[in-house]
Amino acid sequence: MSTNLVWHRKKLSNGLTVLLYSRPFSNTVQLSVGVKYGSNQEPKEQAGIAHFLEHMLAGGSDQRIKLSRKVENHGGILDFYTDREQVLGTMDVTTDKLPEAATILSDLFFGEQFDANKFKTERKIILNELAEVKDDPVIRVEEILLENLFRKHPVRYPVGGYPKTVKKLTFEQLLSAYRVNYIPQNMILVLSGNVSQEKLVMTLNGFRDQQRTGNPQRPPVPVETFKPKTLVVKEKAGITQSYLSLGARTVPANNGDTPVLDLISTLLAGGTSARLFIELREKHAVTYDVMATHSKGTDFGYFSISCAVKNSKVKKARTLILRELFNLQLGSISEEELERAKQIMLGGILRAMDNPHDCYEIITFMEMQYGSEFALKEYIDKIKAVSCEDIRRATIEYLGEDSLCTAILNPVGSNL
Image (tube, rainbow, N blue to C red):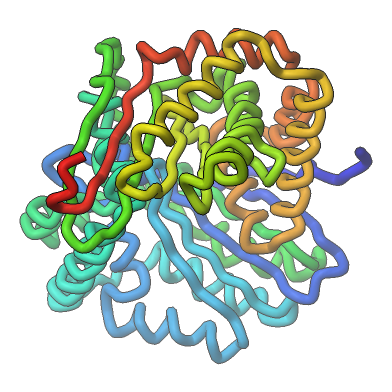
């Protein structure tokens, strides 16, 4: 496999990390700024403040609103989102508009113009967003799972916080979080696409002059040692199917077993040849789709398997999932099946790197977890080196039945 999966990495004098991934035949360029400040870094009583601050970047003043809309004058697209360990702001523009776009993005991230009245408006918008999230059974069942896998780690809290905490947040708390965390040393600038040296210099000039300093606080990582509940069942009005999410705590991204667990998720639910797709959909027709995901960050990890099933088929679906996990523990995987899963994974990575809207997310994640321009290439090498014995061992160690919790969200009154 001959591919270019290495980017250029440099640090500006103000501490900002710059990552350049060249795609010379692209007609557009993507510019993103990642702040190492997400829901995992906020105090419990301020749950949702990182997400609130992300809203204020584009809507926190009349000037910010004008700036965020200005990118559309250049044929561009602007987007922001908050995750557990980062806030990411991205722009997608034509290559000739890169310097103008860079100025806008720099002003949005480093400008201190925030309006208290806009703060009140954004709070209402966020509460509407949280209501929408609460209505989504897929998100809700994962929240139930995480609440039972983690007792102390902030990964158990929703990224957007709770209505009660969002309602108590103050304008002064938001300004304080901004000044502490939105500093060049705590940020990553990613450029991908067709970027000439001249355009690169012009782009970096808008970020090089930012000299703000702060002291981001990273709370100590709580150690989770308890055994999770085997089964948690709750009800929700307005749904017609049951939603099942089965999972376990695992390891952070930099752990040597992470590539193995990632590959296990592909073996189970990566494509139409995956074990759970065949068992749950093709053979027994208990679900339309099934997903297996290994989620991880700098100090947490969890594995989850989720699907929506007919109410009367919940127990059968859970039994089938547990059986496939047990089969992996017995070492039932062949070299041929393992190689097919590796090719599915590697093909997915290459397609994602070809997709401008996935590319910068991958690069930002790799920088945050590994701090190296060679991180993706090294990760692929580790995937290629995984053996059948590694799969068997990791399934026993992390996905044994005693480690698993099953969260089920049933329709109200289903009595299941």
